[in-house]
Image 1 (cartoon, rainbow, N blue to C red):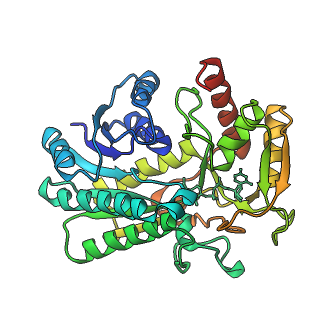
Image 2: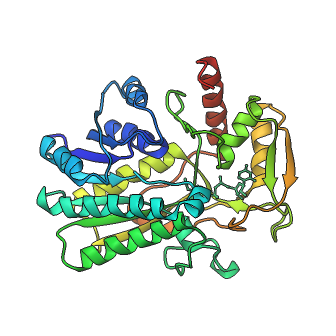
Length: 346
Ligand code: WQD
C-alpha cells in the first residue's frame, strides 16, 4: 500500500524537486500550495518527469479550515514535508508581520491537525541561517553549534519554528519530527523541466547569475570582496537541489519506519564544502564556456561572511550524502535558464 505524503509549498523550487524524488521512491504525493510564489503548471512538469501526476490543492496553510479539508479529502496522509513559507530575507525586514504571521501560523495549523488525522511525522524546511555567523572555530558548522540571534525576521521565523516543533513534541504530541537545515540550494532538475523560478529580480546568487549570463540582467554585482576569506568574497555551501530533495526521502523513511532516535532530530543538509562567490563564478564560466559580466559592489547588509556545513551526521545517521559536483549543479542551472529562454518564458 503506497504511503501518501503531504508536501506544502510543493510547486516551489525545493518542494517540486522533492515531490519528484518522493514519487521516484514510491510515495503518493499531495501538494498544497497557495501559488503566491509559484505556478500551477509546475504540477504538469512533475508529471512529465515522473509520469505520475501529484494531487494538487490550491490552499493557503494559514487557512486552517481549507487545510483541514485537505486532510479529510486525503485520509491516507502519513507524513508532511513543510516547505510553504515566505523566504526573501530582504522583504522580511520590510514586512516583518507578514513573515511572522505566514511562517508561524502555517506551521501551527499543520501541527494542530496532525494528531487529529493520525499523521505520524513532519519534516521541517529549516536553514543554516539559524547559526548566524559561526565562530571560526565552529566551521564547518555542526548541529550542536549555538543558535545565534537571527539577522532578519525571515531567519528568526526559522528559529522560532524549530522551537515550536521542539516544544510541541516535548508537550507529548504523538508525532515525530526532523528539522533539515539547508545550506544554499542551487541548480535545476537534469531534464530542465522544473527549476528555480524567482518572481521579479532575483535576490539569490544563482538565478541572478544565470539571468546575467543569458542577457536578462546587465551585470552581476558581487556584494563585497573585502571579507576575511582567501579571495575576499563570501563563502557558502552550495548544494545541488536534487541531492537536497533526496535527503527528504531519507528523512521521511526514517520517520515512517519508526527509526527516530529522539522525537525531534536535526540534520545539516549541505555538501560539507565551502565555496566562495568568486570561485563559483569561475566554476560557472569554466563549465559553461560563458564569460560572465560582473563587478564588485558594496557588501549586502546582513550577509554572513562564511558558513558551510559539517554533514557527518546526515551522512552517517540519515544515510544520505550529496553526490553531485558544483560543476553539475551549475550546468543544470544554466541548462534550465536556456530552456526558459527557448520556451519564451524569460
Ligand atoms: C549567496 C552569496 C551574497 C546575490 C539566503 C538565505 C538562505 C536561503 C538562501 C532561501 C552571498 C552573494 C548574492 C548577488 C552576490 N533561503 N550574492 N550577488 O544569502 O547565502 O542565503 O538565501 O531560500 O536561508 O539566508 O543566499 O544566494 O542570496 O547569497 O554577491 O546578486 O552570494 O552576498 O555571499 P544567502 P544568496
